[in-house]
Image (cartoon, rainbow, N blue to C red; front, top):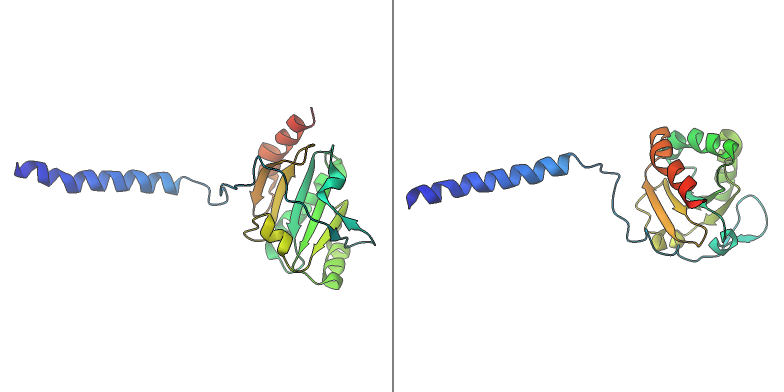
Length: 175
């Protein structure tokens, strides 16, 4: 009888070790989003680079990327060359969501680093970011022709993420 009770701490240790091992092998950037598989939240925001507004409805019938960025975002500098290269390849339109930024700083940042966006919408107060469940900047969403979010990248889009996840998904969605 006493031997059974001696095995309980060992069994608890094994269970905790298994959960710890599973947790350590996960990518902290892969946070499940409740929006994946659901329609992209609607909005209508002013454009950064020119007069007019932008709504996700404007992209109906296209596979496109929505990239949340800001001039004050250090990680955005890391991913920006990847986005500039992607834009040159014209695989899918990239729409920027300039998040909680100042218009002059945002325009200067794009002039200095290059502008990969077909356009950028200005989310000055961050309300659209809240609707999209933005954890932090940068974040990127792949949205299909029907306006459904198919993928969310938290953090910078790296060449690896682009090649292994985003480009194959875009190719599949464009069929």
